[in-house]
Length: 635
Image 1 (cartoon, helix red, strand yellow):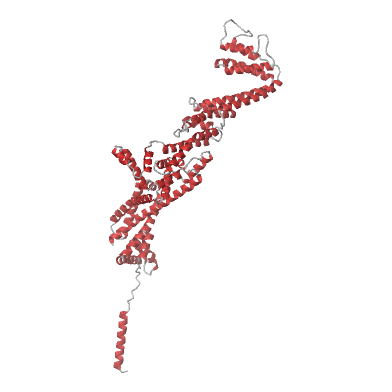
Image 2: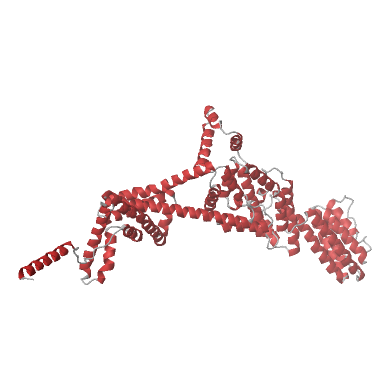
């Protein structure tokens, strides 16, 4: 190959290499440019909740320490590159970027909002309680949360902070009522088509339980104690107090299959109130018999003991010296053995004293044998028992002196006498207890007298005291509208019942009486009062179109028309059809502690799940609206 040919070949090779070099891609130095796609945008928003500048800054802060340049210089470079990459991705893929931003903001912003709420609750519990204590307060808290997130989002995307805060605040403030309105619509639709009846019933019960301030365990424990104390009829509506009573009233005055069941259950329970109260009083005062039965039994026991004790006294008796008894009579009559001073007729007191003296002496002879003196003493006892107080005051010293003489003549007689006196005092305590139950006596005096008695007299007093109250309960009307517990709840009984009750039984008796009062209140609210609501429910049961509202308007009964409209509106808004109300009624009438605990716990758990879900949706709406609106404006 000659020189010309070699030169042409070299020139062709050079041209070919130049062409290949021009066709090859140009390699660019690694300047730290970030790869941004939809997943990156979503992760930024979800994890940090602070888009734009914040995401770029955090990315640079993580990567800058691992480069060769200074941290400050590299931080600025990486941050700028990341922001430019985000902007470029938003321009090239607007739809994907917007979708990822909204999804990430909803997730991350809601998480931040919940965390901020928990932090406020720990740092400033009073402020958190005030905000969450009312619906308006919760709306205000939502508005503040939305405004804060809107301002942060606007700053992160180089938008106007004021506009972002305003938009976020409006979105946050409206989120709760919007969600609640939507929930009401869903409940209404569910009520119309019969879907979700059990769920709505549980939600209503959970709300009532929350208003009562009690827990499911509190209610179940009350039912357990009531059953143990002889009141298994006590039900959930009673244990929940006014909240449960009012809800049962609303159900009983609305159409539904449970109306009759409620009425029959409460009427049957109220019919047994008297028997339950009698048992409570009898057991509380340890008075299983009437006062008359107790008095008769005690008198018979005293006679039996006296016959045995005095029989032993007669067998070991010696000579009796009634001199001191005769002197007591003479001191009153003004004589010393004279049977008569003048021919002036004796008055009743003198006659009684002269008769007592004559049983012991005729002026010349004095009774000395034990049997005769003992019969004289018994006669004096009978005279004193029948006599007026003025005569008793003169005969008692004579009888006591004779009694001492008998005791001196027979050692066993003192034991027999003391036993007889003690038993007599216990018998008298029965009547004194009955007198204390009168409204004419003062509680303070009665309690002081009771506490000063020995144990046997206190028990007799209890039986006499309980008898009039039991008699009043038994004689009260059998009408369901009669509250037999009310007379047992007064200022006087509040003091006396705990003081007079048998040891260890006062608290239980008080609890049983209080439950009977509560059960009557439940029946009274559910079944008593005006019959208008019942009549309206009856009409609604038998006809599909209810003309009573129109009739009320035509006749000028605007109040009745308004009440009907309000009731229909509330039931529709809450989605409460007859099946829902019947389910509510069954829960409120529950008296089994085990079932009540399970049903109430499930209602509370269901309500909490709904509340958490609703709060989550509200926070998501706040976060999504507040943090994406500035970006949508920018795009």
